[in-house]
Amino acid sequence: MSDKPQSLPVQQLLQEITTANLYSKLVAQLQKDMLRAGVDHILKDNITPTNLVAELQNLILEMVQGDFNQYLNLLYMVDVSETEMKKEGTKDIYEIVEQATYLILKREWKKVYYRNML
Image (tube, rainbow, N blue to C red):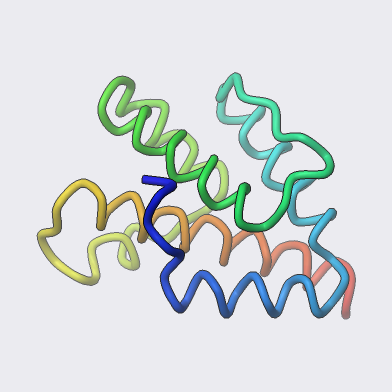
């Protein structure tokens, strides 16, 4: 999946996060929620936004194909809306992974933003 360019919503979200200088806090929040969900994957502190998206997409794809309960647990721990996940209707697995990646990053960004900007 990492060969595919990032979708426009993901690009815009990452631009907003890096502009606010809160990218490292987003990575830390994502790591915290991944560990709480039982996802045994460590993100590097210096991971670039492009690599973060690619790594998250690959991780989600592995979970969807291999351990669906862990994928659902991650969505629950991050607090991704089930309504948002179902919004677009039936999709192929790569579209689901892309949407899940976007929604996870978007939700983590909201947590970081509200904690640091308000």
